[in-house]
Image (cartoon, rainbow, N blue to C red; front, side, top):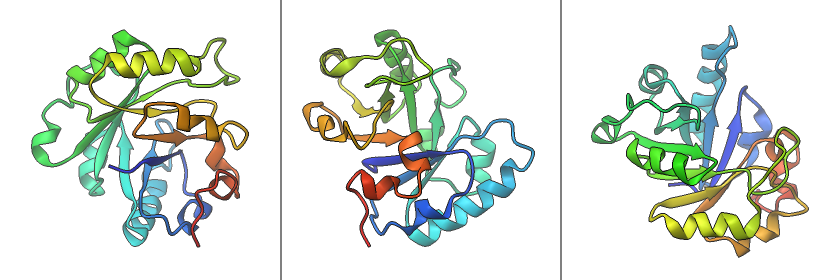
Length: 185
């Protein structure tokens, strides 16, 4: 399982300039008309760079483009992904609370993004380091940090009991991985 995840809704060549092999790319574009065209480019680049590819919320696309796994967002409460682990497809998900973490465990997620760790514009509340660690210790599963991670607070991740982290806005910048200290040439 990678320890750095990049969430993207479109192909961005900057993501694939990093030589770090421990990267997972989560493609989460639900509404675009050229969704599959973007996924084709991303899948090809992931294969070339040996990054793991996760498709959000769509097992047909995950199978079609030979993704390494499926990402189940926090809003998805169904059990339709529960038999994928038998087909060697990794299942990861996201949660915002203890109740949602339990649902992701029921959905057989190998790892769960807990968010938001830090302040983000679209949410009035965030977990903070203390509450995040409490939720991590309550659950015997792989927890990943997500939400509000920036070059200014990325060092604080070392204070958390996590298996890795994911970024959305951090990696939208051309220099995102470099600024975060994870760029290997």
